[in-house]
Amino acid sequence: MIAYFDLPSGLSGDMCLGCLVDSGWPVASLQAAIERLNLPAGHWAVDAKPVMKGPLHATQVNVHAAEGHHHRHLSDIRTLIAAADLPETVKDRAVAVFARLAEAEAKVHGSTSDKIHFHEVGAMDAIIDIVGTVMGLHELNIEELYASAVPLGEGWTKAGHGRIPLPAPATLELLTAVAAPTCPAQGPGEWLTPTGAALLAELAKFEQPAMRLRHIGVGAGQADCAWPNVARLWIGDCRHQAGTMVQLETNIDDMSPLLFAPICESLFAAGARDVWLTPIQMKKGRPAITLSVLADASREAELSELILRQTTTFGVRVHGVQHRREADRQLRQIVTAFGPVNVKLKLLNGQLLGAMPEYEDCRALAASTGKPFAEVYAAAGTVARDLVQKALNTER
Image 1 (tube, helix red, strand yellow):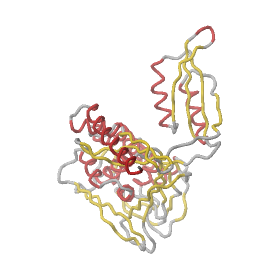
Image 2 (cartoon, rainbow, N blue to C red):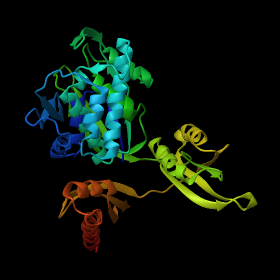
Image 3 (tube, rainbow, N blue to C red):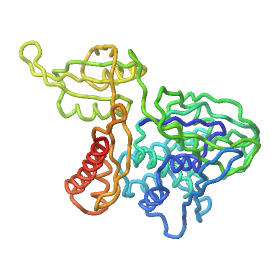
């Protein structure tokens, strides 16, 4: 799945959470994710409620934190998140968001990221916003995130360092680092917070993708104003047209096999749609590997450079993919004897053809229940097969 943040009124951390909950991520799952951070009991709470922002219905998530403006260094944040019982990808991405914040704050205050201490963005509510957003994207199976131009307003605000102009200096540094597009806000005030800017800078690409829409989540901001103070998250499938994909290939016969796995991981992280390895035989009878990558044409330069930098090859072949047919995909939560997991549904012309349990969901459930992974995966597979069988029987 892919998603697009439509930001007519900017973005804050709680607006991110509101979009995710309104998109179908249960608030109970948000609360469960935050509990894994082992924050002091009784010092925080999260709830969600439906609200009207002008004529628009939206979900407002409220994060209640009792600690106030607690100052933390980046190392403190790393330690807190590293100790949490969360998927490694979620922990890595959450820490990366805070690392961006640290770099921006350090530049603003003439310091370094390891010495800077966070003020508002190091408080408990900001930690909940960032970890919760990353976890929600993970559990909704959103593989790529995009965003519109961000509206920036003028004025002043009070921060931990005193009175500062808007947009907040850290917000501007975060946007500048990724050359983010901006537009004038509807009125004065802070419409993009540093937390919202850091999430966008680290997780999103500032472009509108071609997509087949599946869900729209509307998250509400706290303030009421003359226009709907909302952010909208469009969720759907990537829609590819003929000629918009490429296949990259290179033959390698002089590199340690130990290096291929991390390179494949780097390619996936950089946006490759698929990566695979094929054993071949090259000149002089030498065994070798063909590294192949399927990707959007817009990623060709970035992925080609990654291959040239991280492998021993001197060249990458690029082939245009004229057409690719895809079955439709949907994500649905099922309930097993051990707890809920997501399954990926495969549909063709509206007909359900298959359902496959999500590997990471089963692994997380096995870890939380202490059950063997194989047992959890088999139970999820049984429920998924029953789902497909019921659909087939209904069609008959």
